[in-house]
Image 1 (spheres, rainbow, N blue to C red):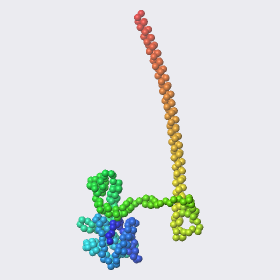
Image 2: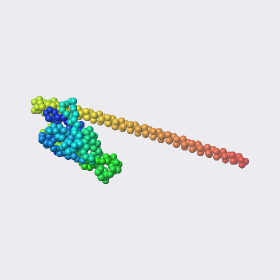
Image 3: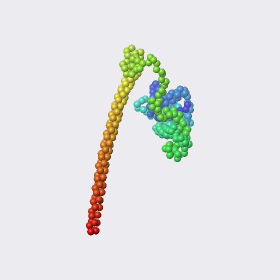
Image 4: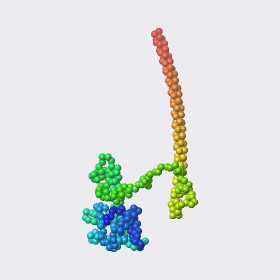
Length: 324
């Protein structure tokens, strides 16, 4: 049986009923490890002493020792005498040993062990690099080479991680189900649209009275629903009330916004008209001043002309006196 990549450290301890209690850093890892242990218990018999481990290059494998009987000897199983055993500690809050997960990686010099915390840090770092590569591959500009066709200088220019193996990249995408767990969609994006049925003639709008309680109305007497659905009915009725309140709030906000926009438009129009009036008055005043200045200039020219004529007559008179 091959184990896939697990993205966090899981603490597991057996209970008296033989169930597995897990404390995980994420609910996704918790569910994943429960499925893994359930599959291991189904595939291994009580007298089984062999287990096939699939060691993928560059991948982290979380080793969990739990309810297998008899306990497996991982060192002899993997034919590694130097492989350290899994750490055991006592949890004062519960009975029984607390088993800590470890990690194992294929290195050039052989297999090496990592602690659970180191495994978690390794996964976070690797996932961050894979996200960057995936984001670049998804939004790669036209004519640009792919990440795995770029050299170190080109990767550095576009701020991409330098050493992401293509096989590891593909394995991480497979382990995280592609895009789903790497960039979780929103609730609206993850929901299916479905098919909308055609409206029939006997359909009522709003909802019929026997369904009005779902939208906040009082629940009718003699309802066919049992007591086990009481909590769900209350929740639906509460959501109906909240939806009504939200609709009323949005409606009042829309009306207030409309009034505010109308008042703003009226104020802007008034300011524009006032500006036009002021500009018109200022233009009229400028024209009147220019006309007055023009009249003054005309009178000045006339006075200058008369003064020149008078001086000319005086000069002629002096000339006649000089001749005598």
